[in-house]
Image (cartoon, helix red, strand yellow):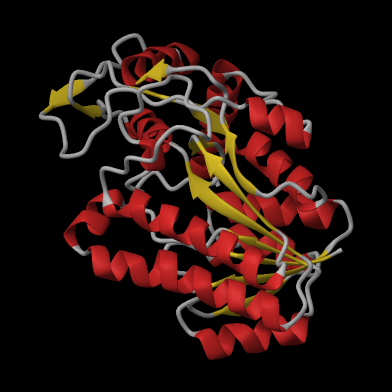
Length: 314
């Protein structure tokens, strides 16, 4: 298969690129390297992946790359993911997450791309959900511009399906974690905690630490993408574990795995828009994709911690 991956130099995207190459696919990567890292693609480029450094807001350049690459499928992961920045400047957030997605869809439509797999968010779209684990039928109640823009982008996938018959599916992720997640990134609390362990610092938790999230390992997310691209499923599909884990639990387990007895959190005031609980019902993924999360939180944390420590030793 010929595949194009937007955001392919990022945390999730680069892991997906590696998996596509490992099964023999031809891969073209589009990334503006604003948060993604070319170093994440070192092995992929050596294996034949092609990188185009461009912003998905540049519709003309993006369309030219899609036309030249002639991909059978586009995996759309490029996005603005900083929740706090989205609240401060929602219009800017929308230019990337909504406008950029429209550019991807338009290029896919005009150049005969057979399938689009879109990456979205579960918790940020459902907000303070009434039902936990939350199914895809839960009423969307985003509490930040980030969740609202990702929801709007999903709507455009449906529109292009109705107007042009474009085959597209959206994967709504839980809190994805694993190797290559930036410890300096706003969204990666597990990566941040691993960075604290590596440098001998105590972690900071905003709020009481009892807030829960559905943490899903990046390898499981990659597997979901590979299943989604060959399916004919459409609409949103949750990709999580259907299990809640508190932030305090993360600190406890990571400290135990690292053999650090005094790894305890400093508590800070909660941040605006912080959800108390978030957890995704993955029954639709099981039914439509044959997908199940394979990695437990403990095993995933161990692999993430090992990868973090290995990077420091390089």
